[in-house]
Length: 395
Image 1 (tube, rainbow, N blue to C red):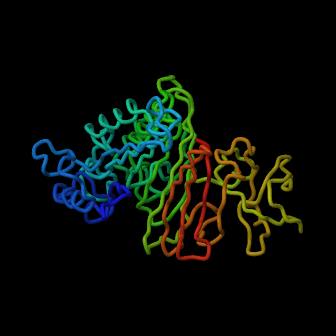
Image 2 (cartoon, rainbow, N blue to C red):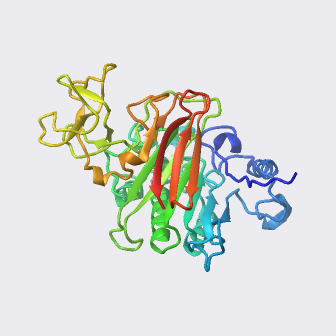
């Protein structure tokens, strides 16, 4: 029988080459692309196929548009069936990617470092700024939302160009100072110039009415997590108002990575600062017990004069000494608590939406066109709780 369900995707290090950190310096780019095309059954008419000869696209990036179900709509991106419902954009963050770490011994490109290369950037701008859809799904082999890690010496980054340069400026432009941090493994945070460029381009697309919601899908990390980030209003008003975007990272078919990994943009049940410092990147641990009383929400219990919570607890749920923070007001959470679900299995940190010790994890995205919602989740089918974590957001 002819296949009825379309399959699409992109690649990352172990699909693309010999392992972590390889990019445009890989010696077998053409043969890897030929294998990808064969594996994904890409037709000869596709620009990525070697049959295109001199006109072949360098890289496996591509896009697909899926219509909304139901009666035919009057226009693309409208509310009825037949309109452009989901625009899937697969990025190739390998073929054109500059070296990321000085420790690899490959010549760095400094401020000229890139994740996508000029041709792919031009293509992506056309996809985001000229094709209207209700939802855009942007797939990348490596995570996008985790900020630049602070666990690595900054000069180890090939893209770093000195104090006050474009590296620092890119993080500052989206409000991410030195307290923000993300994975120390591969991700767009290694080249923040291009990460900020991507986020601002997505923001511009949403403000131009090209999409109501944008969701990033990524892998590589050998764990699963759900993220949300509010891209701040562009100070120069070039890209427009602030916008919230989401990401699902899932990877590890019978593999995991048991480690506590910080991520300032991971979804939290309730966010807290560290003993009143005003930086809300800690996860409240519920329930927590203070002076013999159990709390399942923030309360004024640590003499701060504000609703607060324990950010670390012992095995009997007692608040760890000194591990508390004031809570972010509930209305400022990017994902309300009543729109989250999670199990307590396979967590390696005090983070309900970080799943790292499961035998395998899979990311899912379900669109309910009638309810006008998107549900993002991490699934762990080998365990007692197959739903590891889940959030639902309105379209």
